[in-house]
Image (cartoon, rainbow, N blue to C red; front, side, top):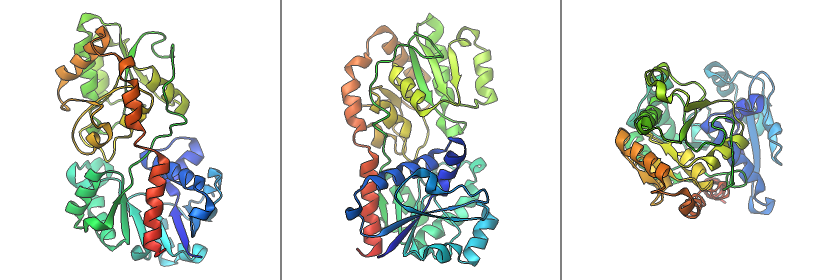
Length: 373
């Protein structure tokens, strides 16, 4: 029987601390979803590979798949050793390997599928994220790989254009939402605003996330002393964001930064919010849009990159720097011109387009094709 090796290294931070970035999160959800597909529908073996000196392996994901582990550092030096000594090949003897995080230093790129999450290193580069180095290695790896998976049609177009890869080699498997966790719930209070209504923005420190525009819109909206407050799920807000708030003392106690929250609390915040704001300038997918909609909560976002693929005709759209436009949506939810209750059903329906089962089955089809099954 043929064998597929999935690189599960992006799962390791979650297995160590319970915290994970977007790539790690999608890696975990894909593996869990593959595990729910009946054995008879997967005509090959699946093994999960991890590499670190702490011995933290994918067995802690509690799937039916065999796990193998290499006691090497997961860094450029450790990966170079693994390539030169053919460590993965000795441990697995795989027919096909799935690299789940854009690039890896491997011995046989032609025996790999690679998930490239976006082409941001070309279309919206941020060199603090290592994009200069990515531009040097990812395109060649993409051209040599057997196939490419990505999460949106926009990413497919950009990968084909910037990396000179034939479009037919690129397969789209949109990310999913955990609908067992994210669904409409009646939430009365939370630890940030108590029983007061609020808007939510789920973000991080990347400049392209453009959370500062939501904060500036909230400051403009707050001139009329509204009831709504703002919760930013953002563990480390930048100094310029904090200074912007400090200059506007009227909103100082109305803007809350949430960190170290559980998935369950995040679901409660999505459900309790009147509206989510996600004015990002670029995304490979835009997971917070689908997550918010799964909870029945409307979203204000932008039409750039892949965001309209996720928001469809249901989301509200503004330009990333349209502060007045965002403030107007806040006013409309505040005064009841737009009512969340009227929009729950259509938001949930849009979110159901994105499931991890669908993602895993689309991915399974690519595995079959590349294995010649």
